[in-house]
Length: 218
Image: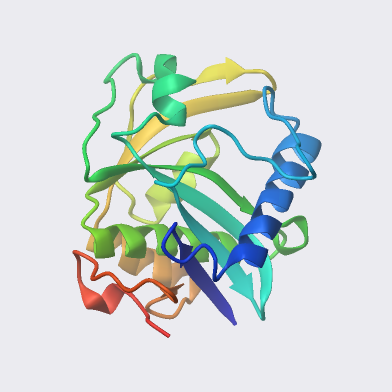
């Protein structure tokens, strides 16, 4: 059964093996498969300057196996958008606030990408919204390939482009901001046939700022 583990510095020790597998999968997908520039594989893993103590990881698990993941990072800290791709926000710019996070490094392993609808990708999208609601985050920034945005809009995500798409290496990239809404979460769950909630907060004992219906504690 699909579930998404919320991993922060508070419970990283509990999920160390899963987190290490996440870094290995990132190396496999973003460096070896996608050939993204300026990324390095070190000891079989991929990490960068935005993997910090402030980062939250959403790790998608099916029957105990990692099948996908993404990371969320506070916009008040250095981010991929602010430090590497600020030119992608040349039209509207981007806001930095404690209640705005950046989502990056989203992936689903190759063997699970042919599913239609791709429930693994849908589970990650729902988990992002659940986490944000629970933590009082009102919107997310992102840098992604242009093909990714229409899918978000079909799920009711109110996406705003921050600038014009630009060619970066072999990919057309765009920066965006999307508000976190009940409608987007409801439509995402409905489209992919997901349980509510999809997130698990094992090992995290603090009280989230948002609604308790958005979390599971095991």
